[in-house]
Each structure stands twice: as C-alpha cells, then as structure tokens.
Length: 272
Ligand code: G3P
Image (cartoon, rainbow, N blue to C red; front, top):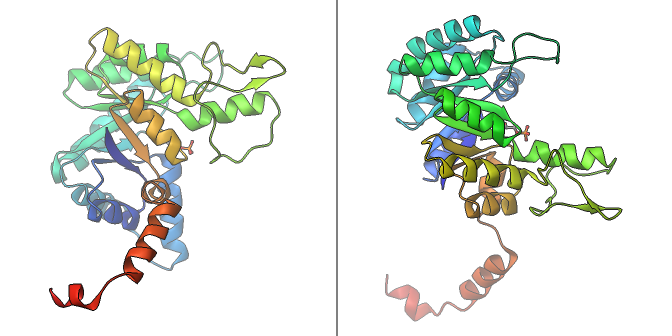
C-alpha cells in the first residue's frame, strides 16, 4: 500500500519525504487554511503560488492532489484545467481533486456536476482524485467517469455512526472494523458498518469489475485503521504526519532499545 501525507504544511511534507515513507500528498481547502494560518501566525509571508510549487517539488514527481473550490461542473472544469496548467509543469504530478457530489442540499441541481467534471478532465488527460466518498456506489460512478483515485473518508463514517447513537467519542479513537453493537443492533449507514468497511467495499467493487481507479483511504486517524486499510487492499492510505509517526512506536520496542543499549560491552563498541 502506498502512503500519502495528508497535509498542506510544507514542513510536514518535507519531513515525511525525508523519512522516505511518502508516495504522494493530498491537500484540501481545510488543510490549506490550517497551513496558511500557521505560517501567518509565525509572522511568515506567504506567496501561495510559490508555496504550492515547493510542495510539488518536494513530492518529486509523486502525486499531489489540489482541490477545486468551485461547485458547478463548468466552473470546476475551468478551475481544474487552470490549476493543472499552472502547477503541473513544476513536476508533472498534479491530480485535481473533485468532490463526488458538490450539491449542498437535496433540491440542488448539481448532484452530477462532480462526475461530469471528472469525465471532462479525464477526456483532457488530467488525472483526478474524487473526494468526499461515503458510499461504494459513489466510488463506482466516479471510477466509471474516469477518476484516477477515489477517496473514501473512513474516519468521518465512524464519526457519523457514533454520532447517530449519540455516543461521546474521541475522533482518533479506534472504531471496530466489524461495526459497533448498540442495544443489540449493529450501527450502520445503509449497510456500511465502519469506515474500514466502506474502504473494503470500494476495493471489492472496483477490483471486482477490473476498474483501474485506485482506492485512496482517507480520513484515517489511528494506526490500527491504517493496518486494516492495508489488509482490506486499499491501494493508498493518506495520513496526517502524527499517524505516520505513531506507526513506528511500540512500548516493547522502546523497552528493548533501553535494555540493548544498557548491555553494550565496550569491546563491541571499540570494533567500529
Ligand atoms: O484526506 C481527507 C482528510 O483530510 C479528512 O480527514 O480527519 O478531517 O476527516 P478528517
């Protein structure tokens, strides 16, 4: 499974690439807002165009998703093409991130505008990452439209399931892959029992039909979720830097290190 860093913070992105574990970057408007505000709070000037170019260079040819902010097919297509033209020449690694359904309300007429935008961008050879996927059927339509990646938001499904049962919870706390039973009933959202179940169903559906769209598990908040995303066959997991760092920690590893270090004999040290 490839690992992307889910961040628009250049320092974090540089760190993940320096560790040698990053295969790509995903950004979104909320992550970009956080990164911009962090820099401004530190009194640093920000030229956003140069800043994004630095992210693209840091990623060194691996995919970087840049999200559109418009919400109709024609405006998303125009913005997507402009973003691609402006930034893809830097390192040839831009994916345009398009919401699967940009409508805010049921009565809005724009439900298929994301799919239409993906189709048109694909026709122009512009790769896309279809975001805000909460059902396997959304993933299927995005894949049929020609999305390069589909991004199921695992953690937000878990939030929604816990919220539907009025549970108080910490967003980073593990939610069981097989679902949570409350009063004898397994919580579900139209048959989806957990965020990882959503990822698994997207993988099964796209692989089952031989679609070459990759499943990019997003909104992962803890290491066990990452492991489960890998085990159900996600092609990619996009992770905040803290989750990447947590993947290497175990108290027995630390304890073992302390003991081995305490046991070093000087004769062995002297050999090197
Ligand atoms: O890549 C999507 C991700 O940034 C959303 O994560 O934790 O805000 O649900 P989260």
